[in-house]
Image (tube, rainbow, N blue to C red; front, side, top):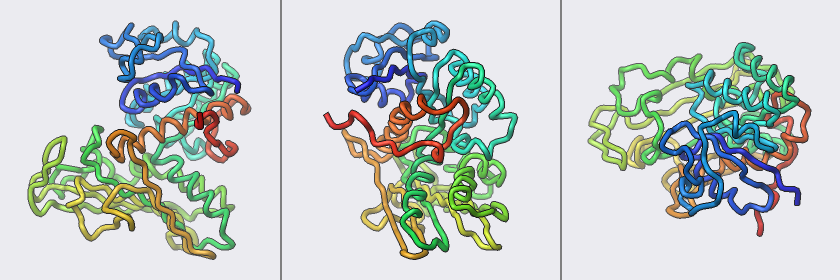
Length: 354
């Protein structure tokens, strides 16, 4: 098996888990790790990842790490809120001759729907470096494109497709404020702005429309909040009575005046919140569900769980990171430029059975 040499950029929640999987993997060789935190500079990345020394040290010297021989950079930077910083970093790697796979800047899962001001610098960097760039992510990402596109290929007719994220956010360590958690119901959160909501999660919809050969009339959205009926305590804090403890939103791809391609999120702080909102069929929470009305009707529920404690956030985030890693061979073989899931072949996870 031809090993692909990989540089990991970022050792946050996802990066650390991916590093643990890369160490000793037969299909990949970890050759460098870029960090931002001065306290991590020079530290063995195995120790950072909690699996013991591996001989590769983290570095803040970006140029030195990018000068290493490597096939790709796996970029696990911050969220799309930091789009300019992420793009600058990824462009730097692309110009240095390194292909890039990324979980950041989730709108770029479908570059064709992104504003030119965002993708042009990456396109220029790909042309300069002769490299390719692929952005994935669990949301949006393979749960919102690979899963539904695969299932729709089993149908003779699709009347409507709904892709749901149903998650308990009580162990999520990211920013709750943008969704409105813990805030007064009447306070408008960032994601209630339709344009921002569409930018963050809506680009999967035109990707599905392209794959299905249909034209969208437009994209609309719905945003609901659920006030806690009593104080809810969770591992990272508490939601006071009357404050927002659950959100449900839809991004609707309109065709013929009807919502036909729908991305729906139902996110709670603990299972006690919003008891009447959608839940998985098999247990209380934490799944991605695809519902196709057509011929035939199809329902698929997928659950991600961490290996150690069964945590859904850990399982989902690791899946996100490894989807990017396993895409590396296909991204390296692709023509230079920006890629989406529509440009990649079936990725089977070479080297995982060992």
